[in-house]
Image 1 (cartoon, rainbow, N blue to C red):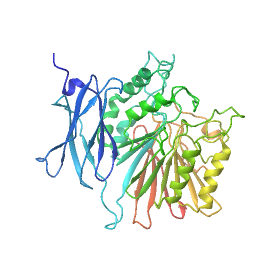
Image 2 (cartoon, rainbow, N blue to C red):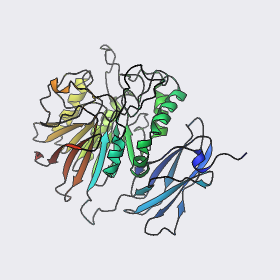
Image 3 (cartoon, rainbow, N blue to C red):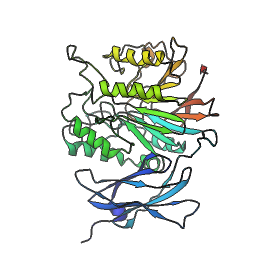
Image 4 (cartoon, rainbow, N blue to C red):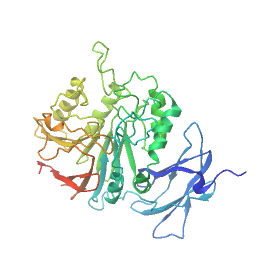
Length: 429
């Protein structure tokens, strides 16, 4: 009997990973071992088709195939079809991607939109805790799709491991496989490049850290299920990476793999990022000439609230090291992108060098919301930006090369705009 092919062999996807000027990654998950390839074509020349090299999916890797469409032409729009065991997959929504344009030395950088959010809980009753379901409002993914963002960045807790998941590879693969199949997600994944970091719930148990015995397995599974350009820096593991989109630099940090336990006060070399990652990040940040430097990390950085779940609550010296470095090196345009807290807010702080530093917290997508945030004091909170229901943010970058602006728009699960703020050289407007 021949193996399943085409739609009969598709389990999840397709999903776009990173998108550069000459190369785009396309992720597919099959339900049995199979040969996966992508056929793609420039929408202006549909008669001329190209095929990626075939990739064989395997059980140990979650039946996942990552196919590279390359070489491509910068600034072009492509359509594509997934083939599994040489039979095409038919999708009820568009499967398209576009490469970044070659604008340098030619034009001003184009405007573009980034979608972002965190904390996506997808119910599975047989393994969830009894009581009221924790996940809801899955239509939020349809609302994001309707915004037609150029890329999306997931800010951690992208899935929630349950007790049956986090001790085994098969459990971890099950959780990602189950959540990735959410129907409302599919059009968004197929046409918008996806980037991601993790936080505690998609790394291991609640508040997990570098002592988690299965962290290497967790890293391998996370790497399998996402299409970031790299995973870890300088030979280390973790979710750390960096990429450029148009004229903006994105730094994706790992606040779990190297983290010492929160309550171990006598642990040597207490850290959240680890020495190697921290030194790399500071050097890369100083090197960046981007008008805005977007720093993704799984917890709030700027808030003055002393809540234990803020990113550096247990590691204030490391927070001071980062913020003092930004001030001392006169680095402009730093915007932390954070999640975790199950509410959203924008924080803005002017340092002694006269530069504004920002922290946009966007949470949660579908997990339960925290309604007590308004009682938490945060001296840097921008008035009118606190949201305590399911929401996402769209970051719109525009303007000439020498005077770029960032407009932040926040939306509820149904796509209703809740607030908007603009960031420019002189600060928030």
